[in-house]
Length: 112
Image (tube, helix red, strand yellow):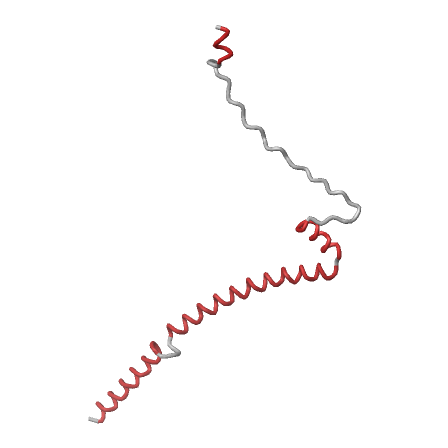
């Protein structure tokens, strides 16, 4: 009789621990989901770090060198210094391909 009570108590404790392991707040599936979320956040942080490094380098260039500011103003905004003359060259569109000469053109038909 005492053996059955002890066995039943052990089974109940085992089932309680299994419930906590698989279905409670700190369960195994929840831990896997949190690990996945953590890896996604680490990837996003790494992307943000790379973007910040590029922006930081741009800021340092703009703070230290007036040439970088001038270069950006010229390339992005089309600015010109006083006394400079801006010459823009526009390319003409390529001529359309001439139709291939055929033996039945009106000019050859009149000669016959």
